[in-house]
Length: 314
Image (cartoon, rainbow, N blue to C red):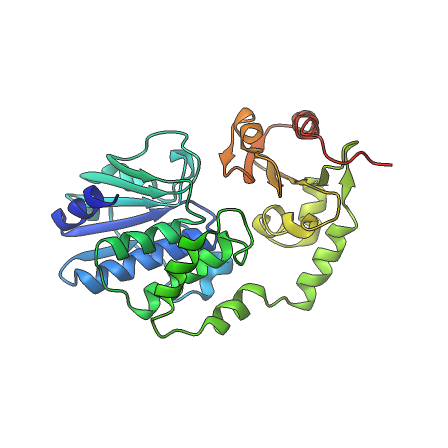
């Protein structure tokens, strides 16, 4: 499956790794994991990872992004990981590279690179990178394995989501042959400060419901600014305060920002990705998002989500 991408990697002396902006664990894990796989197996090559600040995932080994000049892209290969849309790629200088490749598990929206492997059957891009390494008989090292494990854990919802398969567990078993501390991964991912718990409690009290029990939270720009936290913490970070509620199959978090209203959409049952696409976004079947211009559009999106059915409010 990955033969063409491996051929490109062997062809170039410089490989530059990209992922989507505002990274999650899978984006960071696939980027760091690929970087250390390539460094381990091709020590003569220059391998760089570029992009915006890792923020919450700065706890991961080697998460500091490389700062490189435009000239580094001359006669280089850029590989884009965990990104379904060109508009979301962090560091758009991939267009300066001699050739490009993409490894991704999002629902296909557009062609981005010269060589692409897009497979939605994988629970994570980290799973795809692990499969790439295994199929290509490439050596792992502990940092590569730990990074890929972290991304698989986060994007599979600790192995709970639908995309988790026997292949997922087989690849994780292979990663665990390397010597790294899984407890450290889980402590960093799931340890919560008192302030964070207080913030989540505030958002739980803001939950509203549509007539057919779509749960949602709407945060105005003034409310967001008063909280004194970053946008990611409110938009992506508070979305799953609505997860695992009885009778709720779809939930959404809307956050006003300078650049529009961020819409994070989730479902435990339905493929809601077409709704995100309808409003200019995308993502996975049950975890996707978009950015819209105004609250009226948010309400139209909620009405569309409500059409999936669900449980009528009493």
